[in-house]
Length: 110
Image (cartoon, rainbow, N blue to C red; front, side):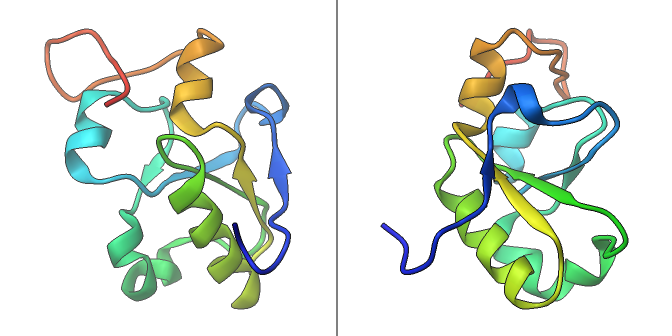
């Protein structure tokens, strides 16, 4: 799918307290996200990359892994230490990890 291999980790291997970068769109983020994640939609990552720390590994997540793989490649090419979270928020949700939503409704992955 991609010209280069993208470093990937399973959701179970994301360490507690890791810098988790969610690159999904606003509606997806609002419906459900990992507590403590940082939201920078993929389409704005180029202009907002300076907000992402370079002094620690960045775990990048989207819905299923495609957009986060793109973001991971771009970040690594620009000097970050980034890894893609395999399966994205779908895998996170299936693993029954904590999730938060922006509204009153039960957090979900859309």
